[in-house]
Image 1 (cartoon, rainbow, N blue to C red):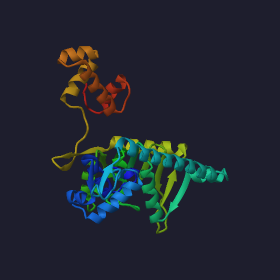
Image 2: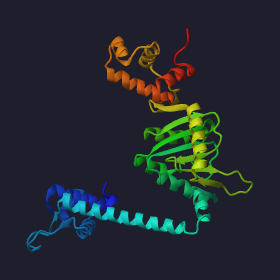
Image 3: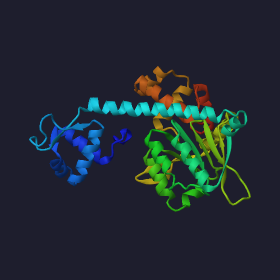
Image 4: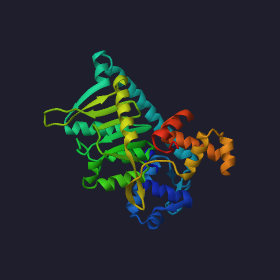
Length: 329
């Protein structure tokens, strides 16, 4: 947990125990933690350099070589602030480098907006980089033939999802037959990745935060290549392509530990609410008719709007008819 401020696992364990105990010798810390005394002493010296531990005032030999933990609210705050300052300085450095990179405009600006990447290693590296740089979302179309990185090798997804980045992935059905594919999908679904499957996926595609995208290039050469895009004029149709494939695909879910296809649709209560809304009843009237709370009805209606991908109730009525949620008598 404290790796982000420069502590390794052993240093964190020693400091955490000292915080709990108040003061202790290296030997006793080692016995409690099951660590060799030499490793404990190394950790203590590192913690001392960080200002997180110190020896009590007085003669160390008289105090039995005890160590005390500095108050976390003070000592850790200082480390956090120091690391934050370092990140701010790094951001300044990045901005300066970007300014220098753009200094030979307009050619460099065009290179920054649209870049051709050649070679499996380079494609794989950029594939990981843009995922690790994502802040909010990663949208991906996955065909049955990997270009540079397989699903099992995509370690960047674990890091990004751990930071709260939301993944939406559409898999070509044939890709599920690859070795380890089901295990990878199961892992992703367990981490709240949204996964859908389609009979055919038109192309591999990766879009992050709606601001950058990668799409493979079809060439006669043996080396894989890809187009890296930041230009908004190209990003919009690529994002639209993903959304169209996503809307037509079938969701995958975990049921009793198994990956199953479950077309999304409203449940019985949603359908009853929807039918009353289409009959012209207000939310309050629907809540009274079904003996529900008004907030429950409003929450259900909001969920129906999201599921249908619309923003108005008029659009919801049309989509409900098109999707077969309701039928005309």
